[in-house]
Every structure is written in C-alpha cells, then in structure tokens.
Image (cartoon, rainbow, N blue to C red; front, side, top):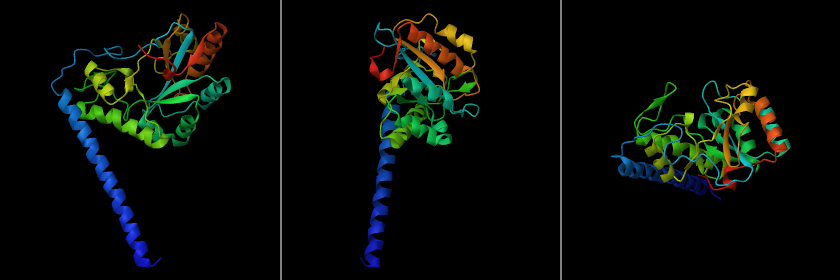
Length: 264
C-alpha cells in the first residue's frame, strides 16, 4: 500500500472515531435534557435511606441473604480488603459489589479481577460518591448532587464507566451515603437503575467492631439485604462478617446475589 493510501486510511479512521465520540456526547446531552424537562417541576418531599422506590429486601421467605458490599472511593476509603475477597472466593459466597468511579480509577486491576469473577456482580455506587438529591440536600456533612443535571452525571457516568470496562451495564444503583430524595429515585429508575437500600446495616461504614457486626445479623430472616464495606481492610469488617457467614451457614442460610431474586 502506498504511503498516501495509508495516510488517507488513518485520517478516515480518526474522523470516524471523532464522529462517534461527538454523536455519543450529543446523545448524552439529549438524555440529560429529556430528564431535566420531565422532572424540572417536581419537588421532593422525602429525604432518607428508605424513601419511596428504594428496594430493601428480596421477594422471598427462603433462608437466603443478599450480601452487598460497597467500595466508596472517598479519600479515606480507597483500600481493598483482598483477604475478605479471597475468603468469599474460597467459600464460594456470592455478593453484589457497589463500586464508585474514583475507587475504580485507583484500583483498576482489583476492579477487573472482581468484575471477571461470576461469583460477584457489579453495582453502581456513583461517579463521585454523592447523596442522590435534585436540590443539593446534604447528609453527614456531604453535599448531595446539586440539581438534576448533576444527579444524572452521578448515576450515568459511572454506569457507562462500568459498562465500558466490563461490557455489562450495571442494573443496580446505591448512592454515596445511601441517601436519596424520591425524585432522585425516579430519575435513577428512568436511567434503568434499580435503587438498592438494605434491611441490615452490617458495619455502619466500616466503623463497627466484629461483635457489633455479629449483633447486626443476629436476628435476620429470609430475604434480607445486608450492607458492609470491602474498601477498609484496616477495619473489623472482615473478622465480623466471616463470623456472621459461618454462623448463618450453620443455621441453614444461603447467600445470593441481588439478581437471583425480585426485590421489594
């Protein structure tokens, strides 16, 4: 092939890639504008972890528990408890992992390892780990998304990031701090994200002692969704949840992923 032909081919490829990027950007802006138009006059009346639309349990009375594990991506939460993950892999304990965009950037190889293991499914924990609000409401001193546009970015940019890396779009979303207003939940649903809360506060942001973690799971019934963290290897979460898993297995409980059951 002549040099001129090679140059022309490379130029056409570059133009094609640039065109695709522009089209993708245009499509994203159209998506944001359509959601802003749909919800711009909606004023939220609720603010909390269990507002209307948040799913907190599995639709079953079977002796099963969905273990959901967060990696938050805050400056103090960029760690990775490889010993906890290794235990889950060894014992074949499935889990749904809610992962933040900044954590992915700092832990790319670990993220790829987790995403490649069918024992785990990847959930969306937001792009910047913000509470999900349409008007900037805050909790724990953390400001929520300031408006609808920022909320869409918080949800959709991380969903697309995960999809680009795994070829699979996440189905489930949990905001930073797990706080929402009910309009934010509807917007997440509009973006084809099911919003996941919990019925068992397993480690309170990786602050519980091992004993407190055991106590949190002491009276569970079938269909619970538990929340813990796997980004704080310095905490007592690993010790506590291993004890919990062993005890619950003795009682006949099984661990499942969120996608194994319908949610309520």
